[in-house]
Length: 250
Length: 332
View 1 (cartoon, rainbow over the protein chains, first blue to last red):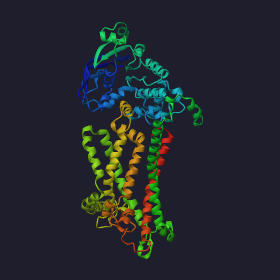
View 2 (view 1 turned 180 degrees about the horizontal axis):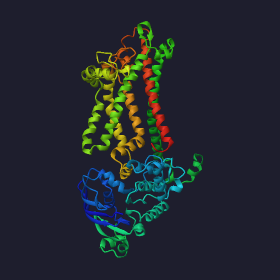
View 3 (view 1 turned 90 degrees about the vertical axis):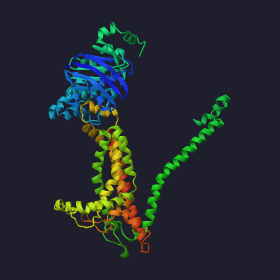
């Protein structure tokens, strides 16, 4: 399983220097939580890992990110290839405008990963991994928009798992859900930790405490402190981290 | 609940009375505003009915003399002999529109995709006004340009080429007409005219697709083209249908540019390189000219009615398609 190495990463939105000199090594097979107040650059950092920032033509990126030792920025790198290795679960569930089955099958289809019975098996496995199979297994042909918001988010997770990524990014993926559905997603992510390198952004300190093995604390576009979760939560080193955990700032 | 108002008002302190002069004024303002705006909005429907009604009324004399199938399907247009078969004009109109749409729709949709998905925002800033400008050029200018450029192109290049290469498969490509004024020329000019309309709407449809849906697709490793296929064909389909309907309505009723290049020959066409005649051109060329011929005006009104009915039913069909799609599941 790959670890993620971030080297001298700088990101500008137009003239705004959004991320400054980020150097990080995110451990493989664990859950890394990126925390910090809104606007600190958490999501920007996350979206640089699957190169989703490329979609914004005003973004300028310098530095490098290595996944399992392979650089993901560079002229020879195929972006779609990077994104097959790095799945993403967005803040709000956004099912594709197609059936439940096709939502999950879409990724494997475009990448030519599986066909026919193999594809059906992959869809089934992904839905089971996202703990959605029992609820939708009998109505795969229905529109994905008919599902509840919590179910939609699990469908989006199944969709991301179906392309068999090594890394899974979660961008405040429980923020738009009701508490029960959010708890469900949390448990799911926790159960996936052995099989994927998980990186999640959250503004919820308690959630980070519950889930994270490794923590990155950001402030105004810079990494202030990072390290194993237990150490960070018990003995934060930096005064900003201490203040943030005590909810005095942020 | 108004029934209980009187006793309650009587017991209320003066300061809380809701039916003060000021409040009544506000309520009336709201009601009168609503009435005026409502009347104006509903009068649009009235306008449609009025136009249809007048056309029908004035077409009645010819409808009394000849049956509807006779008018629609007879190929003989000889007003002097009292024969008003509109088939050549109907076929001419449909053929010209069909050529225009077959050329314009695929190309315009591809252009719209490029504009929305691939172009940088700076280039788009320059490009958008250009398409808007193209859509705003008066038809007569397109017509002139058609006479100067498109007609010679059809005469010298397209028709001979089609005659050599395609006529063997279908006689509808036979080069039958040495002038170049033809269905093909009119269709090409029309396609240029509807092109910017369809480009603009396609572009707007694609850019209205939620950012999150596009990001979700990209995050799955889809290419731009794959993203476009999903957003355009599924989320954007109603908009594309609207674009095509608008282009069709425009092309079907376009008069001036068409009559300048179509040749105005009231005969059933056998090839797209035949000269032809459209309903709109028929009305524009002849209204007020040959009014001494009995029933001529009435026949022209009938032609206008046919135009109106076709455009209305096409729009209605598109509307039914879209609403049914919307009902079937929130996919549109």
